Image 1: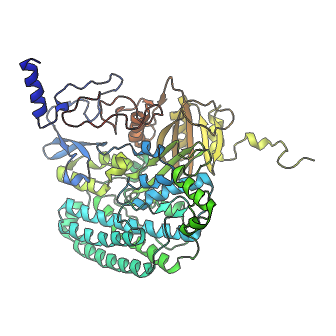
Image 2: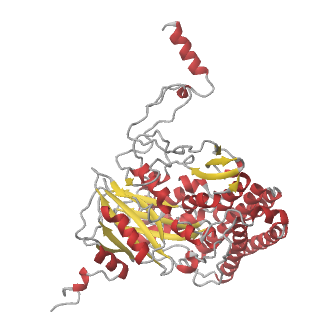
Length: 431
Length: 182
């Protein structure tokens, strides 16, 4: 080795950035690079392009916003995503249906129950399995608690993004109570993997009614505080009213759903329109407002916590007795006690957790209303123990497209409020 | 004796669903099917954008909820209605009519040799992101897309990870100082 080569090697090894960054990276010709995170051209030349993110505290994870600025006015915003992509749909193709919920649970980590639910419902539809009523009601209660936790998280981060920093503490405080309840019921605070194909993982523990009602009371007191702190607060109203407006038509053509769509005066909620679980048997209202701005999206989510609480209280009151999972031996593992005394039970248990169960060939699309909008699962099975394709239609992924109509002709400070009001969960965007 | 099931039924060839029937009437060669209670119409891939425009303008399907694709390279058993020629890829689009509160799914077969379909962005701008995702992960090109770039994978990525001939985790993790895996 010559001295020069040696020096080069030493230099590469000592660079903070990592040796691989110093080498030229081979690029494939089949990839079209025009665009990809870049504006085509800057026609006028008097605007400035600024990247907000990927690591910016108000981008809720790793979202990069390319903003074309004219002074402090935003001319255009383009969201650039993919920083959190971990190939979860590819992973799903290598997991059995029993393992699948663990995977999808990690997509929308702020409301994991909705993801587990939509996956399980897709599997159940392909299997043609009817879930017992108690399982349906448990699922519904957990999904609504999860919606509360998710919207509380929104209240916390939205408050902080706009400048009401104490909201971060308050929102987190109430959300933590809900997460403690999740831990009590499922064993885990987040990514609970509780809703499984065929039912839920375990029955509700003793004394769950008191705990659930306690949490509801705590959250109710909490959101009354948020309401008092923010809703009539002149500074808050100044920062949010009329900011980031979007119309119903823009929402519909851009596949935007959930609270953003409802804030434009379009009362569309899949829980009412296309009821699943037992949503047609409980009493609740769809919250909607008319203005489609940041303030309305804040208000809708605040009131949706109250509506979810109504559903949760009805669940506590009317929880049916019976099985918490379907008693189909091909899908459901046998009870632990049976394994000790029955050979068949042992075999079933072993087969279920090694090979998994087989799902008949077919394809289906199932949609539920997650806290962020329509959460869909498109599943294709070929009769084996693993899906051919498991595609999650994450509402945040589509809702991020609202940034462009919302963010044009706003100020930089408003752009932060706008992104925050979309409430994107990047785990679900990038999957 | 002829049982009910043995009797020839004309209705089998006529889609029972009104939207499926309308699509089949307008686009000859389309085949309507039913999948677990959901209406599915298999259309020619070249007509995909026209079908979307028809659904939006005449059948009041306000939103294209989702567009994605499936790679059937290794699918052991495929469920396809009679008359549909199976190809390697399927592009799947779900539509929702809010006013009618109903859905329809449009599926187009796409051959491996020429994985190109027309873009729906001209009809539903909301398909901009998911079409980029489908291109990125499965290598289906949407002709006429205003921004046909990768969205989830890095721009210099080679290949399309969700294709069945791409293994999972083939690219080793690069540690500081280790030789470039590529």
